[in-house]
Image (cartoon, rainbow, N blue to C red; front, side, top):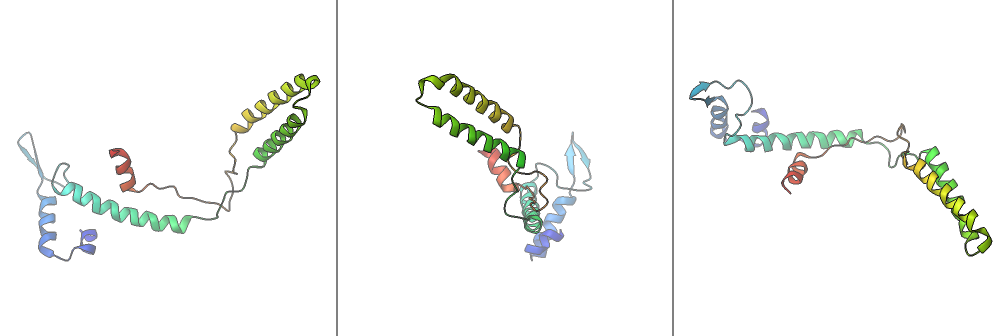
Length: 150
């Protein structure tokens, strides 16, 4: 109710919502009192869910802005070594192209490049333990719902 009072000034409307929340529900023609939350399927359920999630999105956006640190993650040194080795082998391969006597050597270089690429793919390109870079990953409720609908 405090969240609703932030945006709604009409006390009569707030009392109506409170009455809907306190109304309880019927199951198999038996009345059950509501102790917390919004009964699913009620008219107020989507309205209150959207209000609540909007507040939560605002809170998380604020937390995200405070938490983020750094522009880019530092590069992974092992990944960079593999990249340099691949670049060096490609330069060697370019120098051997067009020379008939060196076809076997060219095939060996290409196999080495493929092996290094396979090893490099197992590594992250950035340093996962970079202390100067932090991100809070958060998907807004509205974005998640839109994704589910489409």
